[in-house]
Image 1 (cartoon, rainbow, N blue to C red):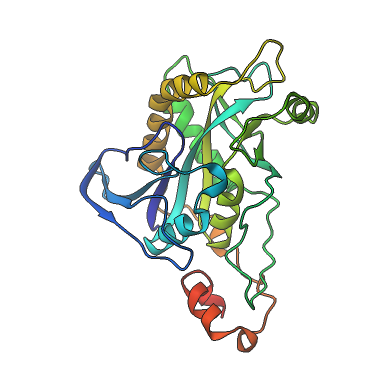
Image 2 (image 1 turned 30 degrees about the horizontal axis):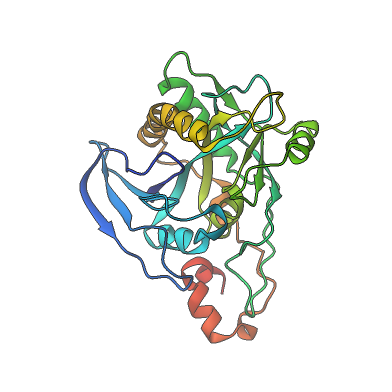
Length: 288
């Protein structure tokens, strides 16, 4: 098992309790990551954890403008093999009230203007993505949340996360449509993060803390104040779940994501431009 990654969403800007901490600034072909990567040993487990606040430590980057590729490339260079992420989300179901923790297993992509892949520029990679979150990590993260979250916290396994472009929240028509499809959560950052993790052969799962009911619910108005207040309330439960997930992650947990690139490169190596080969070598090197 390599380094364990933790991507902190809205409300989570500090790493887990780590020893021998160092901050590493990675230079990537895709620009600068959201922030320096904080790396250290988690407690006395001997396990190395790399933490990255998705929006930067001061939450200065919009979901649309996030350097998703630089973030994932940096974590790959840090030796990360498994990622636990967190998200602040709206609920599309009455029973998923604010304060609920959900470990989703599906995504519906409604984004419009994001770079969705590391590849291109002379190399074509057709990546299967039927199960966007690593099933093995979904199971593990759910068990960790059920074990470590406060007793009054509702933990739900599975569900579809609708990823919208943002940074604006949904219209009522959009929110009502998402609800009518039977989907569960709405947020702004699952895509392309989950896609890039898969393209980097990193197992990936997220724990989503519900902050609001979006706007499908009668008399519901999503405000930043409400989102931030509930994100702060969810923070302790999310961190407890992730800490437990890191502590108890089996050393021999092999995930299908770790060999996800096998058979996906559609371009002969000799036809891939040298500059492109150099850029993707940390990701695709074993298959070129």
